[in-house]
Image (cartoon, rainbow, N blue to C red; front, side):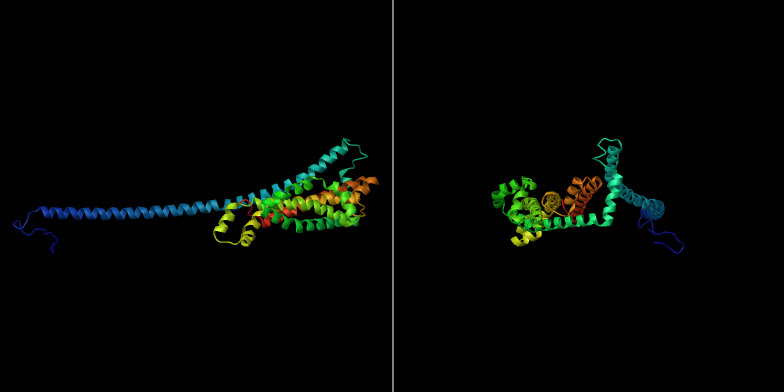
Length: 329
């Protein structure tokens, strides 16, 4: 208790109690004041520390933020420059080797023209439209052959791959004709379809069809069984499993077959245009320029045919990255 004059009266009379409780009260009050003072000091120090850390973080972010943006931008720029250099390096290296062989007479100058004269003559033929017509005729035949091969090859490959026992029974036939050079089939297709465009397209379609069937069938057979079993455990029907699981599992291998098939179709069409009664196309242009000894035209036509094959392969790579970007995940 505390009186009006501020004196403590824990014990009013010595007969009632002793002075010990009075001393204990003082000790408790002093201890409580020390605790309160310590807690206030700790809170003050904690607040100051947090403020300093916040200010330090803001300073660090403000100082580090400006260099980050140029770093990211420079990385992207370096990647683009590197890709451009890598893309241009191949053609430049080819022309350089060609020029060294021509200027150093490593090859008979009568058989190897200058690369710059060849490029100039090729550009003149493209501008005049003569090269363009042959290019379009070859491209049209390749597209027809590839479309036929894809239309029949993909469904047949899926059917054979879905039933491995059926595929094993016809595996010898597929591998036998796939291993047989397509050019060896020219006489057979000439007898069956004559000298027209259909014989050229059919032999190219047959060669591309075998490649597509082989790759699609193996894509179906090598689909991940864990995903198929998971779909079955969830009660999916066989049609649903094929549509949502197997079909997407086969796409990477299918695109491999498509890219290979379009290259084979181009090779077969070029060779067929050389020797199977063609009157136009890059193959006919190459053999005609060789016979008439127009070397710049011959080499230019070969370059254009190679550019067509490279462009077709690049196109399928871009399509594959767009539609099969999840491959391998």
